[in-house]
Picture 1 (tube, helix red, strand yellow):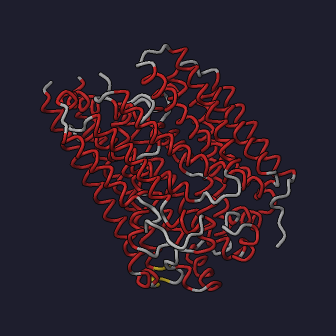
Picture 2 (cartoon, rainbow over the protein chains, first blue to last red):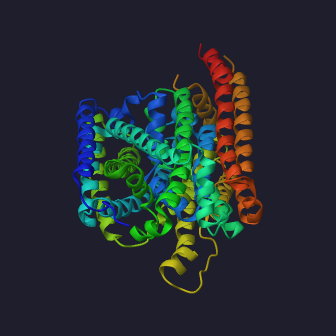
Picture 3 (cartoon, chains in turn purple, orange):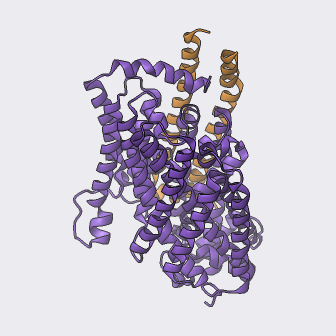
Length: 510
Length: 88
């Protein structure tokens, strides 16, 4: 099959330039509104529920979920749905347990909440290790994905693509802070949802606007097995472990949690999760249609011909049903998606470095506005440089497991301490600290010993630890450590302050 | 204002939040365990082009939306009103 994919053409480059110009415009506009740390980290807490819902959805709908899940569906049918469902069910948990308490108790990072009634320095150092681990692994996955995708989409060299993504992202975050990051995210979410909807409609038009006719055609072409569970889930323990990490990891991702500080109050935080979940669920249903559309209209052989992992299914489908203009549009949207997600990650990493470590640990909470902003911007530059270096270092390596690793650390290191600090009055500094450190460490060690690293990457015949995702072990372990350590050495003063935290959690700042 | 009212409101909020969280987990892990343990069942066709597994997967997404709708409705109607009353 011939395709304009990978050859720079006027339409693709045109869309690409339109997006870059639009985001630069947003950055210039946002930079005039970014004077204080509240504006830099939290967009002045003026984001509306609908805007934050779109931005949350934008942060979550990465290129991996757009191109990756569409590709997975195109190649293995039903199995793609397992991931979509897993990525969605974390959001109700975020709404029921996390969003409102977070908004009322914290300022910029989730460590604000854990440290609220505990000792600042030990808690923030431990929380930073977990946060930075999540952000780094997520960044590596996004940067390597960016390099590969841009090479496939635009025919640009890998290193050039990584440097462009890093540099453009640095521009948004450095000058426009959270306001620019939020608006770039909103624009991208609208483009992504719009582009995917148009594509899905063009596909469905060929099947009388009946999705079932599309699925039937797929089953007719490749057998009824495409509509049934396949090889993705084989071991039940592994399936539950992955499911647990996807579900609880969502509620521990620093760049997602940070968004709840951009809204004015807890009620808006709640409503924004409802919007986000509606958009994300709708998007995954669209992805399912796109995947089956690519399977039927483009065919599996043609898709794997461009990329063995199936990542080019959606762009090829766009070309198949809408010609080069639609291909150019979808390629530009995929680029925008990567850029926006990387920007969100960098900003949350910068908040951890500057707000948690510099201001609250190193300076003991005493730093003036000017210094805070300066350190935040320095941290942004360091992280952008780091992301470029990491992207180039991991070139050509299999990094698909790193998103799973990021979710597993978020679920094992961040989620237990966060939830216990909100719900359990007897949590102590030592308990929270031990839980976050052991959560991070045990996850990294068990992944290193898992079949993913030992067999798939190191080509050993055996793995020491049987599960591909360690969540089933590390999440309970982290809870047990927090509870055990807290009960062994109770701290009455920290327990007394729970009452204050509980009042503020419900009533907000009085 | 007494502490008791914040405490009882907090208790009601957590009862609902935890109940809904457990409901979501039961539905989701039920789906995952079916995928893991009974693939042929999920491959059963319920209509031309639609397998039981696809129907259940879509229903899990629908369940997430319904549970959130229940929570938002309760929180907007009861919780926010009670909080506003306490602030006054």
